[in-house]
Length: 231
Image 1 (cartoon, helix red, strand yellow):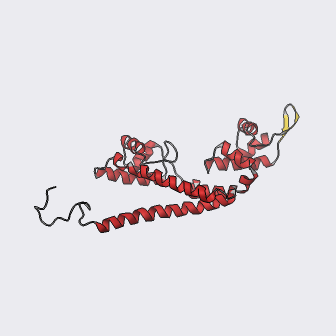
Image 2: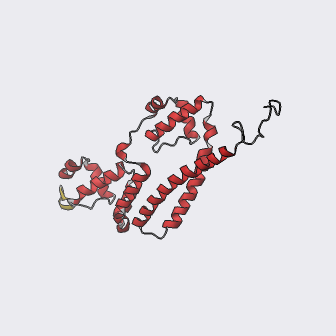
Image 3: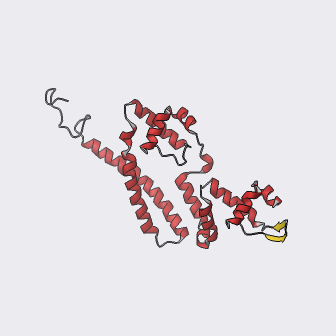
């Protein structure tokens, strides 16, 4: 036990908890106060720590990987997929709410309003990354134009429908695949979805602008003289 705690930096209580949860093999006890652990425990503990900190997996999810040979063989593909979706953990600088407001120019009330409207969607509650900061700065500028947070809530409402369709399509395509094939196919579909979202929505916007008769309102007839109609 002393050797494992020194090698991993974990306290004895955590290691015993891992053993109790089936994440580590039980030691071979030779006496009341002496037990020998498999040397592979150190490497497994490091893997558990990586999967928790870098990939945000729960202990229950990690145990399923370690217990299921099919999932275990696809672990590398899963971790690559996780990094593709969430980005490298090493590059994620996180801000608390106070620091986030300083970085973006938002006040606490605006921050809470944006989260209620689901325009701002941090991956961790009360913690904000670089993408949140970039979005927050843009939203602060939008507030300066007179836009209210609730007027942007349609992004989340419609976005949920898009994501529902994406997930249904993924489930259809990957349902019969092995775990490794599922992870690899899902990674490609994630990349495809990101391109489709950006391309289709922006092109719809461009087509709409191109069809406008004037800048003020595409639904109004083109104004031919000052007295044609009254705003």
